[in-house]
Length: 190
Image: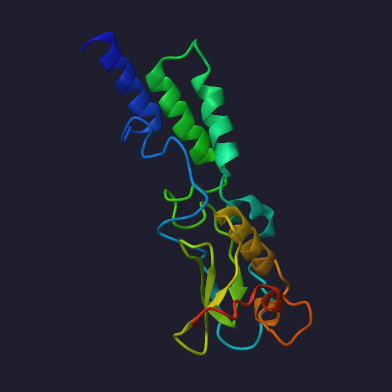
């Protein structure tokens, strides 16, 4: 085995096997999540639980990288002339993996457990067109809410909702200034 093969073997033992040149990471990211993005909800049947399980110490895990943040990290590593290209790829993979933010079209749910809990809703997700879909506990229909022009804006809207003291109360459109009143998409079918 040559020095290159030995070196790759050592890196594989330290970082795990490389899946591709960038371990499945795109060179650039877009402003939407083509396959959507799910935020797991802890559904607690019964009386309101006031979002008691929410882990607010990991707010960054609710948000995606912006294209600019992602490019800056990639460029910082690529600009290092003292590092082997293979090592650069592995470094980039590890930097992205260790950052709590998610990568659109790579991750399909947060990297860390956000633990929003609700007795009012069962599911919460961002669609490819940056809308927010919510399924209430009392039915199977999903309701559509505006998210924003970018996946980052939609994720920030979701973060605002899951950080509320009560997700169910925040989704009451009759309450002045509520999250639902600000984000309800009257033009959507659901």
